[in-house]
Image 1 (cartoon, helix red, strand yellow):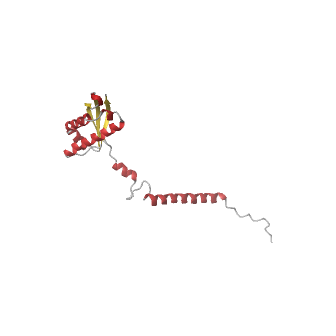
Image 2 (tube, helix red, strand yellow):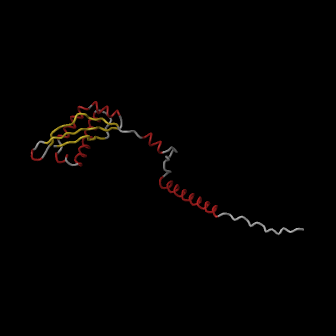
Image 3 (spheres, helix red, strand yellow):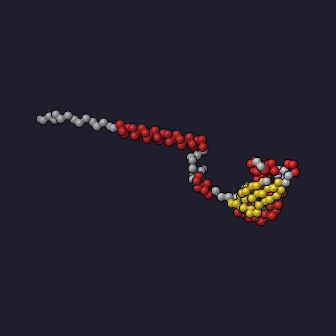
Length: 170
């Protein structure tokens, strides 16, 4: 009998590349699961998902309503109180911001009453207060309260904000 003296081929070595890829996949999976688990337990859910399974972006898009504005074209001009008895003037151009067209329509309807109240409020302001940004911000808040009081007295929807388009005191 003839003997087969050819050496047997050595067994194929498994490449280290497969082992490295497998380890990387396991590490990435472990990190991903730990991040998702942390967000789930601490945040009450996954980002972008609400309780009913809809996307947060869809919910935000349907809930967002842009503000609407009404410019009061004619400036409010009045004298303001100053120290030393000097007569000072204030001129203010306003815009009204609201959440709905209905609120602006109500403000437009009652504009003479609103304008009268705002001129009185501006006339009772101190000149030195109107010189500072804090004083102007306080005036805007008072004006918003005044406008909303007028609208609520008429049974209308309140406004969101009073904005100054131009503000001059001299």
